[in-house]
Amino acid sequence: MPAEEIIALKEDLERLRSGPECSELVEALNKLAYAELHFDPEKSEALALEAQNLAKKQGILIEQARSFTTLGTLNLEAGNFAEAMSYCRKSMKTYEELGDKEGMASVHSTIAAAYKAQGMIDKALEHFHESLRQNQEIGADKDELARCHFNIGACYSAVQRLDLAQTSYEYTREIWEESGDRTKLAYLYHNIGSLFGKKEELDSAREYFQKALDIREDMGNKTGTASTLANLGIMHEKLNDIESALSCFSRSIELYKSVGNRRGVAYASSFIGATYTKLGRLDEAEEFIGKALEITRNLKLKDLEIHCLDKITDLYEAKGDLKKALMYSLERNTNLEEHMNEKSIEKIALLQVQFETEKKEREAEIYRLKNVDLSTKNDQLREAMAHVKKLQGMLPICAHCKKVRDDDGYWQQIESYISDHSGARFSHGICPECSVKLFGKGYIPKLS
Image 1: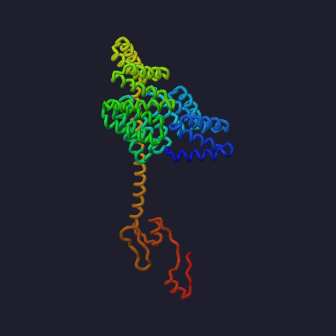
Image 2 (image 1 turned 180 degrees about the vertical axis):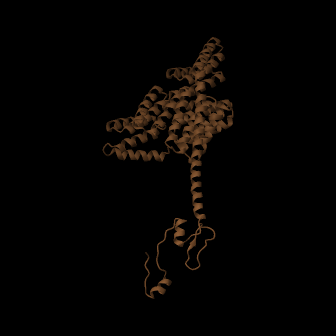
Image 3 (image 1 turned 120 degrees about the vertical axis):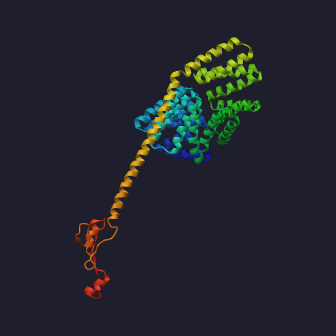
């Protein structure tokens, strides 16, 4: 959100604080809490809790649900997944009671993001698809639908379904570049950078990460900046620009610490440790990777734990401690089998089939409705044309009394003929010339 909009929200909140407690105050608290989410998490949490308490006191269920959603997102970004899911469940229950599908779609998206952060991609996809479905049902704008496709693309990228991910990102890019929303574009450019990185198109990846970083630093988005720095560091490392890589990793860790994002700290620490391993600085590598592994186990981040086990295996191989290397390698393989088992892979494939089927059904229904509409209009047009054709061609008309001969050979007044063959109806009067002939000058004719 642009800085001037946040300033306007702050001014509006201060104005409302000077008056009595009201629903407008609760709404303003929630709006500012959401706006500050990525810029000042502590302030965002304080505002959301205040909104939640006031909404509960005043019995405003919709604002309670909104504050729960913000608190869920804050805990998600801090890596507190149990708390995040607890807030999401409270929010979802309230939205369901209210029958608010827009709110439910938003919570499904947050739940999906929590599953994705824990590496449960099949569950994440299930909730992102549900969010998309509900947004389509309520006729959400194209910007919101683009956000759903963006999230689905991120899931497919996470499980190496890169073509599906690219299709989703291209759909999103067309809409978001047109709208010019810099916050959303930063997310998109970051993910496109990640996609190119997985394709080993490293220069393109670094270019897109830099575009995302420029936006996020300019907007003061600490969490986003930290994430992009870590990924940009990976690209620098792969391109053998070690100094730039270490600088990015270090800056990323400090920013993650400043916002209390332990998952982010673990992620960036694992990569700085891996870089130290390659440089032969093995004690420093052990310190960073060991810390990262400890965090992932405490937070139960299976996908990131597998990643750290991979890095620590490489470390002990480099140290020549093959016993520990083998131990961590076996643990990694066991976790990997449990984490991405055949059942979850099948579920992801099934979700894609369901999504494509629903998409085709929607397209078929749109096509059918368009044809029904077109057919109706064609029928109306044919009827109108038939109506017009009745008054086309040569009309046999008496030269004296002006009666018209119809198709059956009968003579009838011209007014009757035209009324029978069109929608026209007649009123009668006397024209000025006939008025003079019949009544003399000075008579004013009246219509009947």
